[in-house]
Image 1: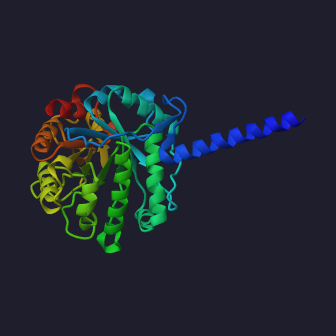
Image 2: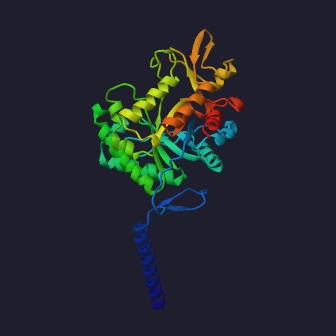
Amino acid sequence: MNNLLAYMNISKSMIYAVVSLFILSSCNKEVVWVPEGYGASEVQKPDGEYIADDNFKRIAYCYHTNSISSFDTVKLDYITHLHFAFLTPKEDGSLQTLTSHTNFEALNKLAKEHGVKTAFSIQGNETMFRTIAANQQTRSLLVKNLVDFAVRYDLDGIDLDWEYPRANYGSDVTFELFASELSAELHSWHKYLSVAVTAGLYAGPIKEGITNGALEAMDFVNLMAYDGIGIDPDSPDHHATLVMANRVLETWLTDKNLPREKAVLGLPLYGKSANNNSMTFSSLLDNGAVPTEDQFLFNNTAYYYNGINTIKDKVELAKQSGNGVMFWEYSQDARGANSLMKVAYESSK
């Protein structure tokens, strides 16, 4: 009996020693546990300096709920980045459950197999973002949860779609703090941070809501150069003309001092009427629109879109004045030879 007790004491000591060693090692090396099927049970923070990707980008946003069975896999060969929409935080800094986690995981793996970088785009209402960013505790928790999510699911980055930080609410300051903290932690994992921003053509608190410090934290900035009905005086009913694209790039490069290598020009894969009704590019073509033109009359309503020739012109503009193009939204594009993402791919070479 005494020998048994001695053995049990020794065993307990060994267990305590092992546990203590594990705790100490966990403090010294940051580890994120990942789900089964991702090649490892844990991922350790990489060594070495983070190096930003300065190559010309072709980014497409994609609803994470898209099913693999209806997904046009061919178009993955035309893009460099796929951004899933959307992941929504809660006011306490935690993350809401995805609408379709299974579809997201399948799409993410498919994109990786095609050599496409992936990120999740973060959205939510303005009040929620202001509440989180203004509080150190919830801001830090959201940063941790976003980075953990990116690491767990082998994402290459996180994209912010806060529409929009406003200077008159002080969220220009808190957004910069949030962006800087998130960027630093993502970069330590060798992952990128991007943001989708307003066209920036109107003076006011929204334009001033994105500070120079926030732009410095970003790897690249997706300029939403669409939904701008009335901006081009020569085509006031069109929501995304080449003239508007020029103005958006000039505004961000000149007024906001955005570095050219971070400027990504947004392109629409849909058309709009003067009354702000939308129709996808694929639906426009299905109903008889000409792929090389920019206007189509459907049920006595004119829809304005970006056809093949305009996409070529905008890609050329992006090559001269920026460093990439971005599409909203992947599934709205036509298939086959008339795919606008295919046109952008061929034009960017």
